[in-house]
Image (cartoon, rainbow, N blue to C red):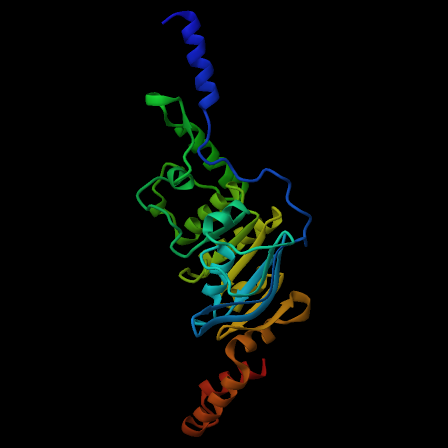
Length: 306
């Protein structure tokens, strides 16, 4: 190969040393409190079945919006609308002030909306760095010499995890060896790196113990500090309260209210989640069979009064 040909090859390699999917947004985040997603009277129908109706809230930069509800409350339907998995049939969805219908998750991702589901979409036997870039691996070289840029992936994964406050011993270890909380945090850091402005977390603490739940809550707070808008889906008000800035409660597909933290207490939030009047009726029914002195009845009455 002549010197001229060698220079041409080197120039081509430099030109093609690219990442398959660069982070989608390098813009500075909007000021805290800026609405990124706004929904007004949004709803979803499947034929004659109403899965969600009359839901109104906003998701703001630098804030954590907690969506609370029991099983079957409509939480999954709501996040699927925000994530682009389902299109809404009623109401209005605005992103950056523009009314939109999200036709697919790819459209949502292009707008900076990333969703971390409970199953996390990780491969347990692959190392942390491979999972961090799964499906968006950087490459170098060209043509038949094109190959994965392993050193860049390892360095970037370690740096991005460190930026989120996640200190792993070795990014070469299989992700399956991490705790549930640590795997959640890797998934969060991955979404942030690839340009998420809005981070939707689907029950991230549902299958975790007390300590690991605390780890995940810490990284949710970290994401908020970096200016992200976070939607935290949970059925546990005691997990939502420490990190939440706004609380929206769902029951049987309808909104029970959308409250900033300054307008609601943890006790009131818990009582609304427990179903106040329904819990009171149940306690009276049990009192007639168990007796007023039953410890269960005393606990239920205390919960209702809260």
